[in-house]
Length: 160
Image (tube, rainbow, N blue to C red; front, side):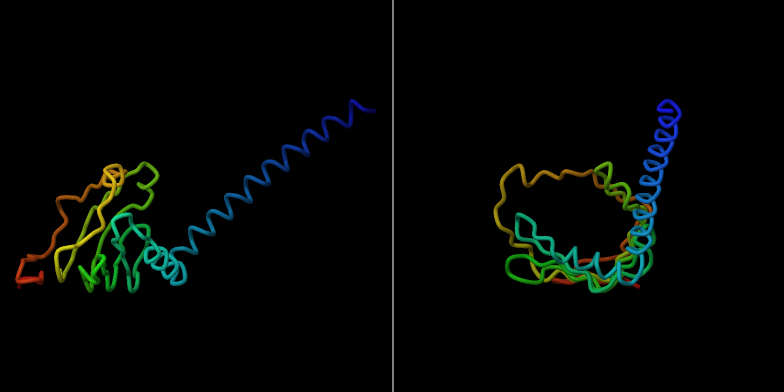
């Protein structure tokens, strides 16, 4: 009798493990789908605004359009230093893969900045040498363009 009950328990145990793995996959998949909605975009923009770098730079994004997993449009991208606004770009379009972060890489296949304004040279807090090293590899494709951005006093403008 004991010998007959053991195989049934073993099967029930494996069903429980498979069920737990499937439930975890459903939760992760749902989270990945939700983050690419309007609510998810707002959450990501809020997380970006919450970042405080060691040297004092802060970043804000007014709105995220498109997909977070590819063709993304950032509306009202701003960078602040210790004295205030440093850089502003009303529209930034990029095609990238966020999954490259898992291998410590940032690869941008396409980057288009129609107009950008640099108000002053960034003034940052001195940071330790270890904090200055970039922990990721950054790559921007040669097909990316800035549509003829040029320096004119403290403003980069699109030519043409």
